[in-house]
Image 1 (cartoon, helix red, strand yellow):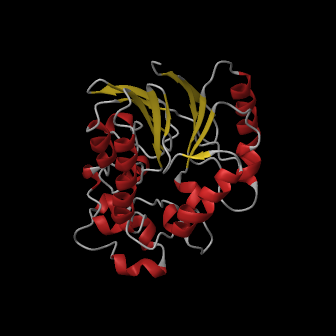
Image 2: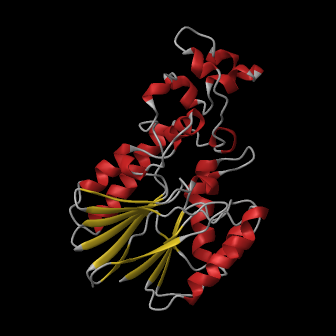
Amino acid sequence: MRLLVTSDLHYDHANSRDSAAALIERINAEENIDAVVLAGDTAGAAGSALEECLGLFRRRRAMLFVPGNHELWTQGGDSYALFAGELPRRVRNAGWQWLQTDPFAAGRCAVVGSIGWYDYSFATDGLGIPRRFYEHKMSPGAAAQLEDCAGLSPAADDVPPAARELVARWNDGRFVNLGRSDEEFLQEILGALEAQLAAVSHVPHVAAVVHHVPFAEMLPEADADLWRFTRAFLGSRRIGELLLRFANVRCVLCGHSHYPVESEVEGVRLISIGSGYRRKMYRIVELPD
């Protein structure tokens, strides 16, 4: 099976749409592709950009869709209801398989997929930032500038002086409303992924496509405190730990970081696609038939 995977097209962003459309043209020109997988952040749910983007792809044997955190962005709405109801319906109506709950299997190969999520297990210990700031998705320096965040106490004794100077926000804190903690959402996501993996446990060769980063080996290099802070929101070690429990998982691909990485853990091939706002990329992976 020849699997083509791309991610982070961000088709709803004006500065990203033309490059996304150009990449899709390149994808459509590829021959002998059995399945196309979108690994999250294709387009936000507002408006019709998502359907417009999905409609640009040439039909293949399988068209598989994994949501990303940007698909859950909403202005004051219910992100969980969007994730559980509206998004799957719209994706299926557009002719794509909702890989979040429905694994794809063909012969000796299968593909499972998940949005993944984060639990701050990739947070940089050296920054010394207390957990409460990660829960609010903002650094101490950012909290100090916002009146409604005074309860975070950015000048408290447990906040290192250097951390008080760090100004950064993760916009999921503004636009994602799950009605539950990140850890609770991740636990639910892991349960759904485990059910998929169990359903294809008899298949010899499985590729797992996860939007968020599942292994530390797939994280981007971070050469500034700003980027070290954002590592907390890139994924979770627990995703990788789950995947390694299933010996038939041969390959893991992710998006989200916008940084290309290729590595290996315990014989499992790891690929971070590297597609993002400015640079669009895809990868082709072959699974034995």
